Image (cartoon, rainbow, N blue to C red):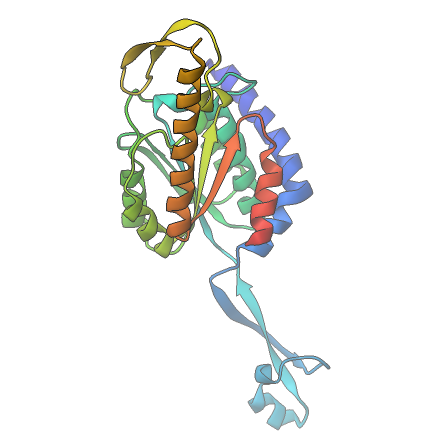
Length: 287
């Protein structure tokens, strides 16, 4: 894409996502993800309904009337967005490519975090980690993250989710909100999911195109694996072949959902044609 096209696309995504974020997601995000603790704010006179354990006994004794300590939540959190940039993510048969759809969801998450004064960082990975943008605050930073997702060189290599999670845990020690975007077409070590979920609050987001799950009848065709470069001829007119392919994809999805559930991590399966804002809203509500 030319620079002017990138700027235009980023602006379009900002307009669409900020409207959705302000309308529905920001409040739910704040409620779902609490801060790291409580800090002292002030002392005020006791009011009916205040918790007895908040009473400041020193000031109460001095003034001979009850006073309570007011505590405020330490709001600042860190959100890490991990995006698979293997070649299969640079694909789409609907309005958007997977990469564009991921950029839009990441924008909604980023603006929700920015609206709550939280930091957001980005890791782009495939067979290894290719780029890291350290967590920062603010609108300009979120726009930079969107731009990086859109303009990354998508790599003809199998994605290594394990390496991305391991790298993140080695760099970011403090508990973070982790959103992992991939189509999960490649193998991974489920043990790493368990380790990451214990240390961070992890949501895996499988972004798929409808043709990932079911291949239509287009006769004899040459199928090409964008990551490995392998090519095979397939008779897509065969109902048995199409059924076998679809069932294999369903089985892979069931195994994926099971792995995340067993790891106490959250998982979301998102079609590039679906309204992700409703799915995120429901996820925040559950949290």
